[in-house]
Length: 111
Image (cartoon, rainbow, N blue to C red):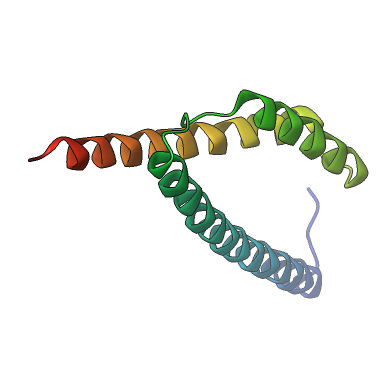
């Protein structure tokens, strides 16, 4: 049976708390960045709806996936994970754009 030094336990706990604090700060930054991204994509959705453009743009999405995969590789992040994340975000953006287009279409049809 091994016994641990209480000082080691305290230093491990302190390091764990420091790392978790950094993770919490990064999570907050990610949420704020996503909020900003969605503010921009909402504006894109309104512009597309006003000009009767389709909610999805597969060519742009493909370019963005390739770009993000490259960025992920440079950052030592799994490119497949980055692609999954972008696909999840893009699906949500398209859903927003469809909602905006539907609301605009409903408003245009009212007498």
